[in-house]
Image (tube, rainbow, N blue to C red; front, side):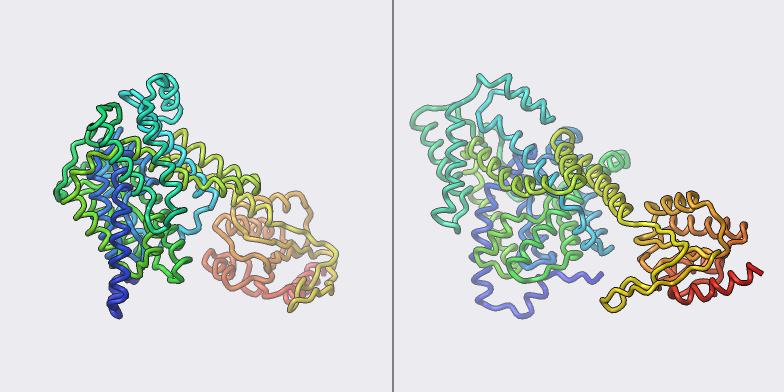
Length: 558
């Protein structure tokens, strides 16, 4: 793999005009990222500054080493659920270890050129777990949105709602009002100006309002960040987690989920950006950059990071041209943390909850979800299974079972399209010759049979072929296995074919192979099947096979 960060490619012909555009975009994206980084940090079960550390360090590294011009990296809503679960079960040390492991996995994916393969993850799986994450994020924000007086909120989805219902009488209407007005501001801001982010406007307005209510009117029921956290407005400190073999083994599945989620999110974001800018990203370089960011960030207290679609689009819409904009966004966040970080303690928790409710709505993809429900039963099954498992259990199980189910249903679908036909009296010479139907048929003399396989000859069809052979049950002199429509043969197909040849030879039945393409021929040579059947009996087309079969049939009839 050629590791080519876009930053170095763009700097070769970098201009002052590009810098002006990148500077403006970077400043705006940095401001936009501030409330989101804080909200994602808190929702993930860590302190607010850890979300900022991630946006700063990971954002800088992803832009520096990344394979896209405009990608903005940092903490995202997709990671909230899994990060929260890891923190609850393994603590911050466990989260750091899992993130570092995921980073190395992403680097390996990049160098193994798996960037393009990840794009082939079934769409119902992506929509299923994205919608599931969105619903789960929505559920986690109900306590702060309604100002409920609950000491410990259960981690599981159903348990959360049961506790919410039990404590419904503790609703704080001041907090609810702050949350609802925040959502309204975020929804209305784009109608006034698409350049100004609604989440930032909501946080500034509601922070001022709540500060006035608390300080001037004596209303103390509205909780702010400062009531729950002590924010450290200083540079992140290097701290290596204590890594042990037991921790690595226990966190391996979680690390894999973080890596897969990070890869999918970043490449989806990069693909969306390509569609807007007309550029083409380097998926493998992007995975390496994501991996480096996730390896480094935990040593400074950060959480998992990936490409952020909303911030990437903000960057594009505000004139971002090169990765310099992403670097500037990270510097802006660092300056805000150092010089204005203390002011973040006045931000109301209900306002952040409102921001995340909007994030969850935007993530939900409910229109795509609804559209997929009209697709085939197999797609619907994959979609619903992934969605339900994400909500009820966790992402690790959802991704694993979702992918497994998608693969099984895909194999079944391919198996259904693959057929085995038997011809005893006549067979078409060819179905299509240069786009026209060729109706000429070849007459099969007694003692010659043709078995035609259409589709991949893999483990899904191999048993079907064997069943057809047993059902026919007769004993011709020559069997022609026609393979002109077989694109490939796997080990199971080769094994079944080998068994057929050996059993036929015991019965003195000659096997000829017809229409074998170059790829299949190489497989037959490697597995020894070509030698077993005889190279002279591997024919390029049905006419050649028929001539050979007629000659053998005459010898057998003597």
